[in-house]
View 1: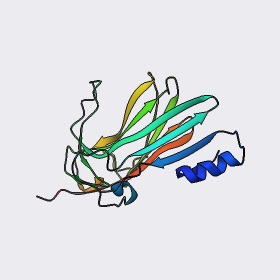
View 2: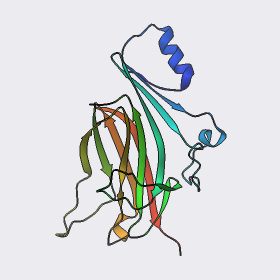
View 3: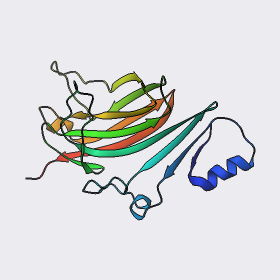
View 4: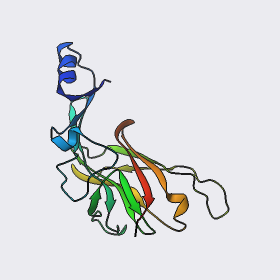
Amino acid sequence: MHITNGINQQNQINRKNQKNKYFYIFAKCHHAAANISDDGLSGINLNKKLQKFNIQLGKKKIDIDLYSYGEYTEWDRNSRKLPKIVNISHTVQAEVGTEFGYVLKIKRGKGKKLDFKVIHPPLKDENGALMDDFTGEYYINSNDYEFFLGDCIWEPLDDKLGPWRLITYLDGQVIADKTLQLVRKEN
């Protein structure tokens, strides 16, 4: 498997006549996309920061878009609807109840397994023991699928502040890896 950035490196792989599985990352050519920084963007213009992934596993090509990331509306986990983006940013102004994470749009991935891992700041459970990173798996149930990976801040706020790294894997390959910095919301 080859990991490349952009079309030029992909063309280099093609010129070598390598027919193995390949993976490449394509960042949309837009002024803001070429200048991604940790301070993020405010607003809801999803075209400003968009990463697209194409994965070819055998003969089946799966398209994956990192559609949005940052702060979201409250998510009703019993609903089929995903939360709505409030602010696209690498830095999330957090208070108790703040929802954060990212949304992936996956096409032609039905039946594939997603694994995820959330690496959080040192959190303690109700007994005072350090909590492990959050992990899980999910099977994609349609060929036009949206996946939200994130969390919601709960009491106490102070131990939730800091970097949260969210990683999603498709059949063992990393398809999304985003670190969001949670800071105390300014009043």
